[in-house]
Figure 1: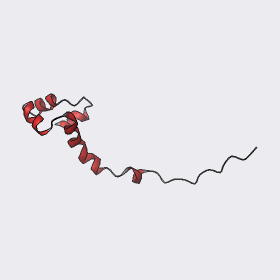
Figure 2: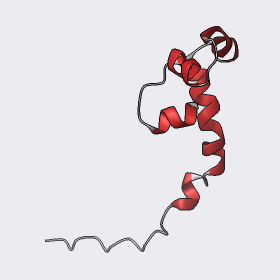
Figure 3: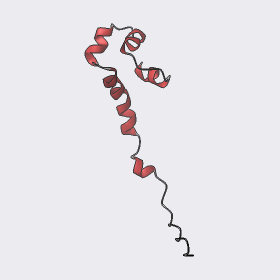
Figure 4: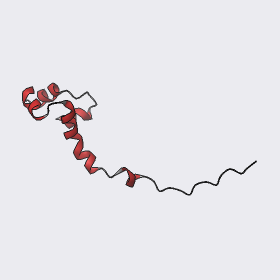
Length: 70
């Protein structure tokens, strides 16, 4: 539910998540006291599955020669 909500680009509101999941907002708040906690739970598996940023960088090329002195 929350992943779909985030994927739509709408702000993450615990009330909306509870309604879509057919739960009471109290149930959602007991597990996720703030929207940030829910977002972290949703985002963590995606972040862990992506490769580290350094390994995705293109190989560096040889730096260009400096400009000739006038």
